[in-house]
Image (cartoon, rainbow, N blue to C red; front, side, top):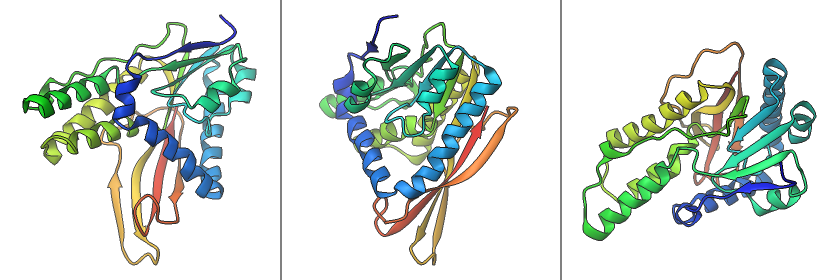
Length: 262
């Protein structure tokens, strides 16, 4: 293993045009505003990951959706594991710089949906250029391929995130029904769970979004994971006070119900 390993996708320009860079930058901005509330949630995530490591005892671990590493107990993981793969569609430059001399860490920049982002982008481009029908039934969810040496996978709050930007990109560019969007979301989420099932894994995901007025006079709840979650040996749940200041939705508070299984 080289001192610093980094594999970058050749399709990064497509991901940037679809808004993945902006989304990731928004995460760290929201964290700076909501640090106190987020730190409670992030602590739960780190505790679950370490408990899963103690349960499975893997030598090599892949973190899917590693991002800013806010919820990744990397130092503790490196004491328990030989090698950590950090996998995301884009890694912040600050994180790459911080870990560039860490020989036990490999960065991989890839689309964790197995190439669906590129498919969606090309289909939208064809629609905009030639008014070619957007054929949702022809979207193919390929399995994301991990390095063979991986012994445990952590899916870190991406199960319902994998489809959001793609569905937003579709709906803002081509005519689409709610039922068609739902089918795209199910396709992506089901494929991700199918991939995880081939490994020892730890899944952390928000499963419900709760939006309320500041005075709690009205409240809306929305399921964020459409696929049924597997029944594993360990389950925990908690609330994540995501936005208490009305930035995510104007003049609204947002809370997520989070579930972790391994």
